[in-house]
Image (tube, rainbow over all chains, first blue to last red; front, side):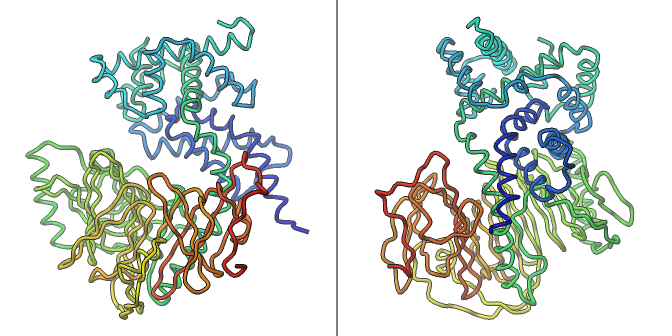
Length: 176
Length: 410
C-alpha cells in the first residue's frame, strides 16, 4: 500500500548496517574526528539522493566507501592547506586493512575500549576525557600541565597505542 | 615517534607543502608507518565514540536530515512566497555540498569601479607595511578579475564568479568565503580593525569566520559582521530585490521564534533592495544606517529591507518534547521543548505540519521524549510552523503517558 516506504526502509537498513564502518573508514582516511560525522552525513545524503546509481551487483558498503572517499577528498579541498597531499595520504591509509572491518558492530569494540580505559592511571584517563569528551585543545592542556603541545600529543599517541593493544588483546582472549 | 607523523596527528589541515609532501613520501615508502597511522586514527575514532555518547545518535541524525529534505523545500517555498515578485535568490541554509551546481553559465563581469581601485591601493599599502598574509586564494571555482581567471584575488579588485559552480576563497584567520555563481564583489582589509572586508555587490556569499577571525560583509542594503571572538561563525548573505512585501515587527519575529508574544500588526509595504542573512553557527551582527544593529543568531534567518526592517524571519528551535499542551488562544495550544540551554514554548495550531521519523504525522502522534526541530517562518502576516520529530530508538510508547493532543481534538 505504502510503496514509497520501501526505498526508505531499504535506505534505513543500509544506514544502520554500514554507518559504523563508514564513519571509521572516514576517520581512518585522516578526517579529524570532530568532522567525521559531518562528512559521513554527506555520504548518506549523496547516497539518499540517488540510490538508483548503486549497481545491483555492488555491495552497499563498497559503494558507500567510494562516496566516502570522494567526500573526504572534498573535505580536504575545503579545509586543508595541502589538499592534494592529504587526499593522497587518505588513499594510502584507506588501503590499509583495518581492525573494524572484521567487526562491523561498533558497540562491542567501544565496550572493550571502556574496560581498557578504566585500567589506565587516573591522570591518563583525565587526559583522554579532557581531549575527547570536553574537546579541549592540546595547547590548553599543555599550558595547564606545563608541557609542550608536542609532548601532549606524544602522550596521546602512546595511550592510543596502549589501548589498541589492550582492545586487540581482549579479542584474542589475552586480556592485556 | 617521527616528527612528521606527530605533526600530522596534531595539525594535519595546516601542514605546509614541504611537510605534506615529505609525509606522503614517507608513508608511500614505509607501509608499516601507514599501518601505525591507520591504527592511531582508528583508535581516535573509537575514543571519540566512547567519550561522546551523543555520537551514538548518528543514524537518527541522518534519518532526520534525509527526512527533512522536504521540510527544507517547504521552508524554501515559504521564503519564495515571501518574495513573490521579490527576493532573488531565496535564502538558503545550505549544506556545504549545495555550493556545487551542475550547470555552467557564461561568465559575466558585473563589478568594476574606481572606489575598488582606491581600496586596492590603500590595502596593498597596508599589507606591504604590515607584511600580513598573502592575497586571498581561490580554492574552488572560477574567479574572474578584469576578464582573467585568477588563483589569488588582488586586494580590493572587483571579481565575479564565472561558470555554474560556486567559488570558495580562503581568507586569513582560518576563514573562507564561498560565492554563488554570478556573484560579484571585492575583498579588502579594514586598516583600523584588521577585519577582512567583503563588498558583496551581487549574488550570495556563504562565510565561515574562524574562531580568531574578523570579517565584515558590506552590501548596498546593510553590513553583516561576523567576529570570531573565540567561536567560529557561519552565515550567508544574499542580495535580493523586494518588489512588494510587508515588514515584520520585532515582536512578530519573536513569535516566529516560537516565543509567546502578542505581536500585533505592523505591515508596511516595502520595495527595493533586500539583504537576507542566515546564520548556521555563531552569530552575525547586521547594521543599517541610522538603525540599531540586529544580532542574528545560530539557526536564524532574516530578510531585511534596505532600511533595516525585517521582511521575513525564520528560526529553528531544537529540543526534546517535555510537556503536554497548555491552553493557548482560540484553537491554538502550546507545547514545551527543552533545548540545550532553556525551555521554549511553541504555539501550535491545526495548521502546524508535523513529520515524525521522516513521514507525515499529526500532533497527536508525538510523545514526550521525542526530539523536536521546530522550523518557524514568519512572512508578513503568515506564520508557518513545521515540527520535525525523531523518536529515540530506545523509547517505547508508554501507555501511561498521555500523548500530545491535537488542539482540534481537545
